[in-house]
Amino acid sequence: MFIANEQLNKLNLGIIEEPRIMLVSITLPKQFQLKVKQLLTELKDVFAWNYMELKRIPKPICEHKIELIADARPIKQHAYQMNLNYAQRVREDLDKLLDAQFIFPIQTTQWLSLFVILPKKNEKL
Image (cartoon, rainbow, N blue to C red):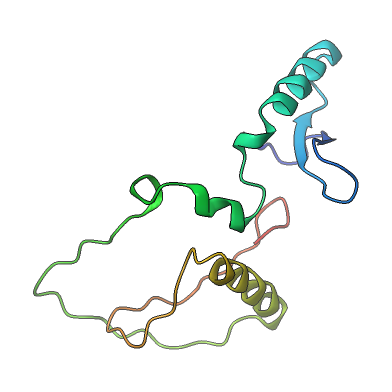
């Protein structure tokens, strides 16, 4: 669980050229922090560190479909302009997902939702 303003210790489970950062609370006893680091180091190959590594997850585990009501009609939403501060970051994330073939473009659809981008407490979007 992430607690706002909690002091965190960054553990690099990778190498300098290719960091694998994990965050551990500094409120944990030092001995427990060392055990956590040892465990995470042993199991670091089970984490997906980027979108390309997500391709190894079997589709039946991660793929989902949104079941729609057969006679439902789409509701038109008004378009709005995305905050320009967020637009580039959203484009970068979408490009990563497209490159990893985790998502794919479609030609047309009647069902479409607009992005709602909000900053989290940890400053990510």
